[in-house]
Image (cartoon, rainbow, N blue to C red):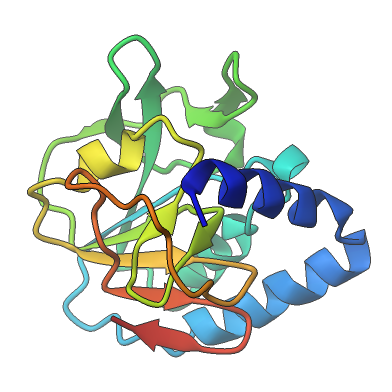
Length: 186
């Protein structure tokens, strides 16, 4: 399948999920996330969910990290839609977040992070068995991940699809993907 078709189908599937099922899937994602080996992880980048699009609730992961791994520095993205680039900012809590014009939560006062990143939790709409992902199509994460020496872990409410037919040289492959039932290594 082509990315445009996958994107449309995945968005539709998400929006048709009941709130109860969505909450159950997120709890299962958290249980899988807890199994990651975070030893040696000093800085973790994690996306903030767009709740209207029923993205995985990364706030559950952030809360668990803050409680169980307070030594891990959490950074979150801020997008520049003119350049299609992202900057990383220290996560200071929900009170520091504000929705931008695209309904995406972004940090307001979190200090800019310019140092190393050890692990990136990558958003996606779908992923295939080779470790490639389909996002919203703007390329923010592919540009961010290019040349970055960090673990790249996708977070998906669904299982892998067989194959994305229009993968190109700019698409960055994931190292792992977490689903509600498993952690897949590529």
